[in-house]
Image (cartoon, rainbow, N blue to C red; front, side, top):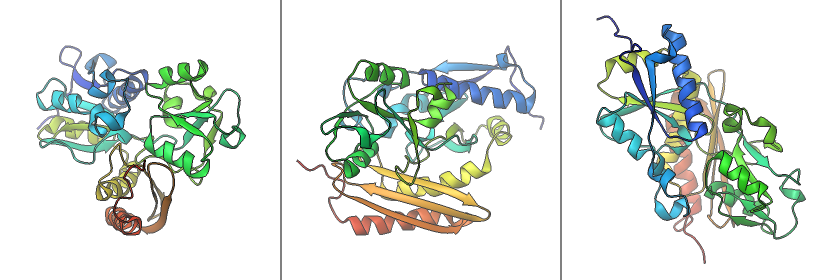
Length: 315
């Protein structure tokens, strides 16, 4: 059967959040699909969908739910046919998708590192006791406090532009943003320092864009196959298996990163107490095809080392 390509009069609808970064990711997806099938930009329609996480901005994420806060409404639009594809930041994605949806396409991964952003400091070690570090990420919060317990972490929600404004307004002395997001926005000049994974292990799937589709949409499956990046997919299989076995959410400080070297996959994983009082790490290798089992095994061993109550908040 001949593949029925979208046209300007019958465009393929790409669903996304409305932040500048989310839109940049949707534009990249559109450009890659257009290039793969020699289609004009008008053959695709960008559909902005406001999610719960976008609407509720005055409370910490841990108080209002998990990763699904930034995906539920978009996935519902995919299920009811309002959109044809959903473009996601993979670090926002739950490990389970609603029945009828598949997430199996990834664009080439960007820089995985966290960016330290500060107007008057070169690094966390330059900040005086009591200085405020702004972040809404429990992972970053715990990673800061485990190494710099003399600093104070304050909640710092909002998109990239909002957080940069808060920083300039003096709400905090520094913050962290993903290098990938700043690169995609053309804002790499705001990076004070990119932090090596050996110092601050990134969030699961950081820097990766995923594209979700309906499981029965053959056209979407064939088109997405043309832009899928296999190495990124292989890395995320291991990282997301690690996260799934840990039952990770926005309330559990978890970090992980898979890298490829020939036919070998290296996975580094970390779990932290939410108050930053303890961090447990692991570092293993396996053949690429065993990445998912490597992730699950590492997670089981870290959970055993952590013991009951490791992720509970201490008063």
